[in-house]
Length: 109
Length: 122
Figure 1: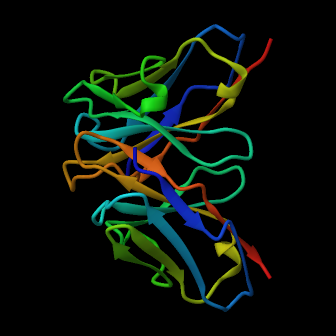
Figure 2: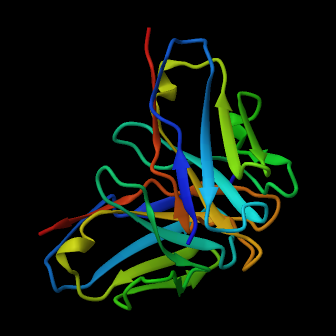
């Protein structure tokens, strides 16, 4: 089973600043990596898939990069609505097998 | 736009089973990659397993193999997830989620249900 490790566990950033979140896979997942945002009491929302492709309706301030085992989610200029928990997920195409990182909480500094 | 509507909250005794439903509308259910993901209180997301209804065979994370059963009924566009031998650690919100795999391959989740809280308590 592929283990996903996110860092840091908590990130404190001021509005308007850049946030950089990291995700590492225990073995190569190629570009099969997605990022999600989750706010309290809500279901997760897909931000990025294929490591770098923004999902429909996701603002351009969200960007993803990386391949293999090292991935990054960057939020270029934090808005108030961006403070949430972020998860990375690796996925196979077939047979289906996925795993999530433990999450990074992005909080207001 | 795919919409996923899940069944309501459940309270179960340890050792019993629970079956959660997820009804899809607005998309191509048969070709969708349907995942089940759970989230224990205050914890992260955990992928349990998935199914593509047109193929009918489910795959499971190793942790859930043998205790979780995922099925899909194409005639009603509904997916189901059953957990047996419930224990207190199974108390969680259970989500169904979907991706239109006919558009592009992959098991990421574009669409999510609202979640179903399952509480296991004696």
